[in-house]
Amino acid sequence: MNGNTTTDKVAKIGGGAAAIGILSMIFGRNGGSSLAKLGSLAAIGSLAYQAYQKYQQNQTQAAPVSEENFAVTEQNAQASSQVILQAMIAAAASDGAISEQEKQAILGEAGQDPELHQWIEQAMYQPATVQQIAAQVGNNPALAAQVYLAARVVCADLARKEIVFLADLAEALGLDDALVEQLEQQAGF
Image (cartoon, rainbow, N blue to C red):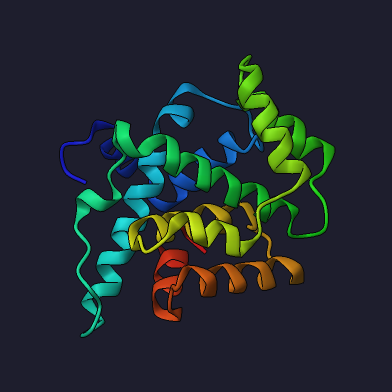
C-alpha cells in the first residue's frame, strides 16, 4: 500500500513476519506497543491485500478487488476491528477454552475502557461462531481475507481443533483454497 507510513514501516521490518509479531503483541503473547496497537489493522490489511493480489494473478475468474478495499479508514476501522477481534477470540477458543493467560492478555490490551472490557468479556464468554463472523463480514472479500489472516495468526501451532476451525471459517467466509494458501504464505506459514 503505497504512501501509508504504517504499512511502509511494516514492509521495511519484514512484511509477513512483522505482522505476525504485531498481532502476537496485540494478542498479548509478547507484550504491547503503540506501533502494534496503531498499525495492526493496517498490517493485516496490507498482508491480506498482497496475498489477494498474488491470488488474482493466478485466477482467471477472480473478481478484482482494489487496494482501497483493504485500507483502514475511520469509517471502517471500528467495524473491521470488532469482527477481526471476534475472529481472534474465536480462534483462541477453538482449542476448547481461552486460557487465563490469553484472557488477561486480551483484556490488558483494552486499556482502562470499561465498555470495551465488558464487550471483550462477553465475546470471550460466548465466542462468535464462524457463521456469525461470516455474517458480519458479508460479501466483502477484503475483510474476509483479513479476518481469516488474523484468526490464522492466533492458531499458529495448529492443533486438530484449530485446523477444523480454520477450515470452517474459510468455508463460511467463501475463501477458496488457493486464496487461503496465499494468505498463509504471505503471513509466513
